[in-house]
Amino acid sequence: MDTMILENKQDLKIEKVIHSQQNAEVLTAELSWLSLIIQTRLELYFQQETSYQSIYELTPPEVADKEGSYASFIQQHKLNFEERLLLILALVPHIKPEVLDILLTKNKDYDRRYSEFGGLLLEGHLGLVPTAETAIFLLAGENLNKRLQYHTLLTENFIAIRKGMISVSQTKGNSPLLSSIWMIANEYVASILTGTPYQAVYSPDFPAQQLHTKLSWQDLIVSRSTARSLQEIRDWVTHGQTVLETLELGKRLKPGYKSLFYGPPGTGKSMAAALLGKSTGKQVYKIDLSMTVSKYIGETEKNLAKVFDQAQQHDWILFFDEADSLFGQRTQVSSANDRYGNQEIGYLLQRIEDFPGVVILASNLKDNIDDAFTRRFQSMIEFKMPGVEERHQLWKQSFAKKLPLDTKADLWHIAEYYEISGGLMMNVIRKCTLQAVTNEEATITQNSLETAIRQELQKEGILLN
Image (tube, rainbow, N blue to C red; front, side, top):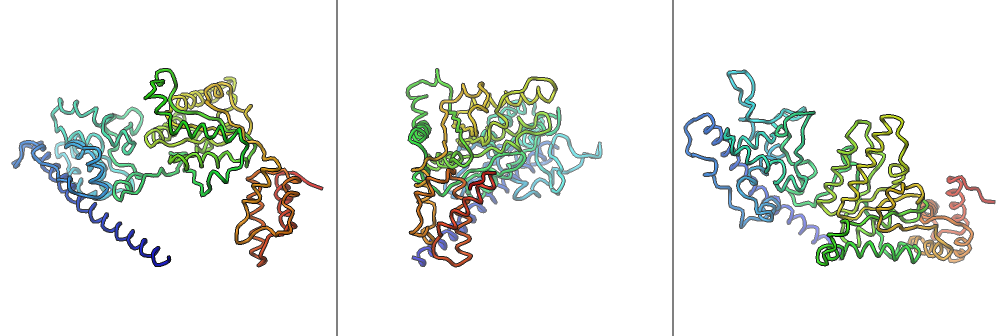
């Protein structure tokens, strides 16, 4: 068995090396092609002697018989000449920045760089970072008619923009749109170069992180009504498109599915959200609302827009935990801050309503959520504190097989006497298991279990006799 695992790991390493070599071969050819295009464009622009009358005489490298993630991306999206050029240009700063050094040439008449070449010099990067202006120059030179034709491609239609791999937006204030940086976002580079599936990176600019779980539906102990409601969400993920498109109800129904999970902490709301994603093959991203609300006007909408745009592109499930902190009762307007706070809520409402996927909001109390939100939910699912039987089942399945509960322990007594949530139980299990391992004990005793329960309840401000 161990030999088989080692062989599989070795095969995986060899596969990665081969993939890397294939990608390097394709990218080397693509970079050489880009270098020739830049050289030819400059020769044409400065009316120098050149072997070509147009950059379109420079045929892109053949990739039909090539393998690797970069060639696959070109093949999958059927990229044409312009799109191939735009893609490799956006990747250059990450893999071979010196290709653009020639565009740092100065205009001797004004003793500064040529405005028409575009590009920015960023702190910490010695090379030129291309902008949309750089892309337009390479494609159209000084031909205004062609520049106008390519404007839409660079701002809307290019596949990398639609996928969120390149973000075209004004860099500062009212700066021209073509001054936007033309570069593959850092988080997408690995996916293009190595074929690694894209995963969003948690940051102040992207206040969301992926939820994972090693558990299964059998581990989620909830009431029957809660289980039925969760199944409805799974059914929507599986059959929602049929309802909207095949049965043509999309004319009358709003897209997507919005649900409110409410109940005390530790009752399984986050776990249920993670399991919904795991069972349907969807990634679940949890929104950190504490990082979402920015002190800078407009930044909140900007940060949320990134989350919603990427979620729509990748078909994620969005999970807003502790949603009442932002989705609660809206305040009466008595200041500019109140007005802006309500504006943020309005923006969130609209994005949630328009989102075509699954959005889940979690709250400790249903009454904490503004009525304006509750009317938009397709389901409101209560996660109650577990009853005696549910607590007994949770306890039974929680102990490690190699370090079980002492057979003399009365688990029914513990389930009946201590009304605690599944989340608190796991804190107890952690404490007891660690203590047993430290003391080199073979089982967990009832005494140590009850002591740990009381300690956890004391942390919650609950004292038992």
